[in-house]
Length: 341
Image 1 (tube, rainbow, N blue to C red):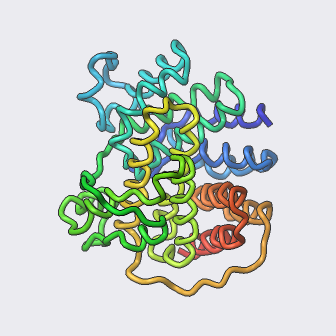
Image 2 (spheres, one colour):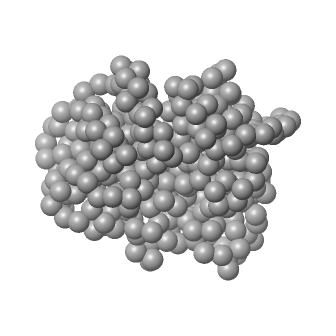
């Protein structure tokens, strides 16, 4: 299992973090999800088809100095420089130290690459916590580099004694951006002038008595379930309402405790932002059927779509915490929506 994931990562590390413009390279994330759930025999076959769309690693312009990182932050033209910067960092310092240093710097820009920066980091950290290998350390560096290159802050949350609520109710209360005809950057830019956004994103759902991990799991679970009734609005982009906070949840055990609270707030902001940008105005009826976790992931893998694989990965992980059949059914439904889009 370890060998197959590392082989896949080494194969993918000759490719860049994006292709066809702004589209993220999902290869490392999908490969890690397949291996994590015991489908390592599918990895190279899936990559054979997927890698045809990928491009070479972008070239750098000029090295980024350790004390001059702020100016190139969020500059995709410097992607090659960020890749070189973090490759040096993770191979000269303990990976957990690099993560702890850069996590609070990158967290305000959690929307980077339509949240794929943090998602790629989350997959890398889960793999490293399972076993530390050179390929997995390199993958963490590439994930951090992509996040830094596409760093994108969200409109600020409000401040005040907002009342918390359960995550599903909180998602239902998130206001929608008025113009949903454009790309994600334009949609997220509308949040700054959206009435109700500061209050919605400032009220992080979940009981204060719960741990940060439990509150994050509640947000992910609510987003998975909501995709079943609202995913038709944009089946692919709404996947990230679940996978972005899940990436934060996976990274949490490797972060200093002082970063847990800010991580929860940023994760909720990411989920709320994706919901505001892409959720349709009304729910559609959804009737869950029977199924099991292996069948859910097999269906997603056979679809060939990386988003379907990542959503199945999220649904299964939440189902393992709370064996609600709706979670697995939501994954099956999401795969069908993505294939029919």
